[in-house]
Image (cartoon, rainbow, N blue to C red; front, side, top):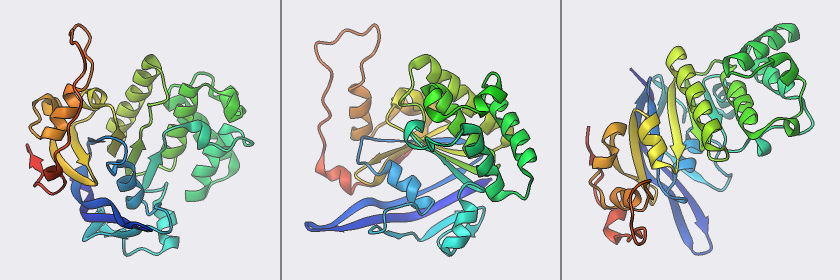
Length: 283
């Protein structure tokens, strides 16, 4: 069952040096699954996620042949209607909670506010829902954490607070933009386990944006590889090591591996033909 359907999504900017196309004709469908979008910085991953929620900079020109959530066109909605979609139907987990949470508001109140914006409820009910959500993301002693300010929580706990805030409105679709890049390995795996459990139990669709190919290969169901604003290859996550596109192979070969001795890591050499060559689809 398809939750999000995107066809020919384009995002461009007018600059003193001409038009820059950040996203060029991206198309994909995501159902109740975890789909990773990978690529180097500037490949268009984050801009794709922001364009879906219409959170691009004002100067951006965004167009799409089709941009639908459960069959409803997002492009046809007014800005006021989109405010009801953001958070309530599609939530976005950002990269670093230190820059996403309000530093002068208790974390519990911020999560409760996310619930009250989209539900008619009393403050007491919102507090109870928040405590339950903090418990769901494996935070010990939710009542104590509720009253903490963002600077009083660790990076891992802050990311769990962000996940709780994005999930408490009960969305249908989740966009996670580098949600674990600022965390150490142990905490990263804990946060991924929480995300996996919540996605599976709630039947959400997840768009997981990352630089980490190894992480995406083990965590996601499918992978879309982006280069220069386009999807150049798509495959099942378990088949990522069998990728055929030169760009994907270059990314994989540039990764260090424990137990493998090499004089030096490979350097990715880009082929100008990759910008326009047809995408490789393994499915």
